[in-house]
Length: 69
Image 1 (tube, rainbow, N blue to C red):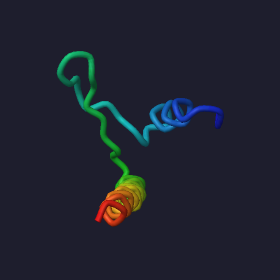
Image 2: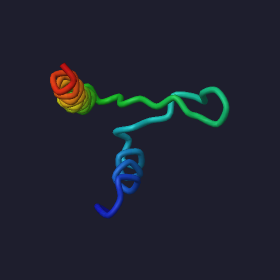
Image 3: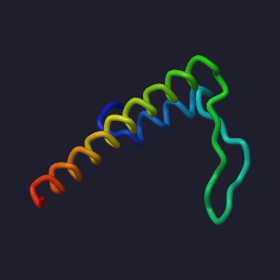
Image 4: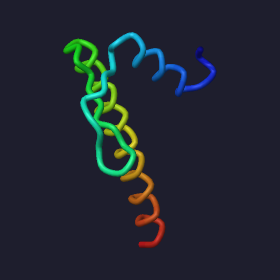
């Protein structure tokens, strides 16, 4: 089960923590996390990871800029 992130999403979908809310454009689907606690945990995790990666990106740019100047 833990060998691939796809397997984790399959389990999350099968258990109802991720639900389909319709079809999107082309071949996509609209998905939702109906459980408030799970949705909040996922949102906090994503926000933390995106902030962390954003800060790493800014640090790389600053390092390049300082080396050029």
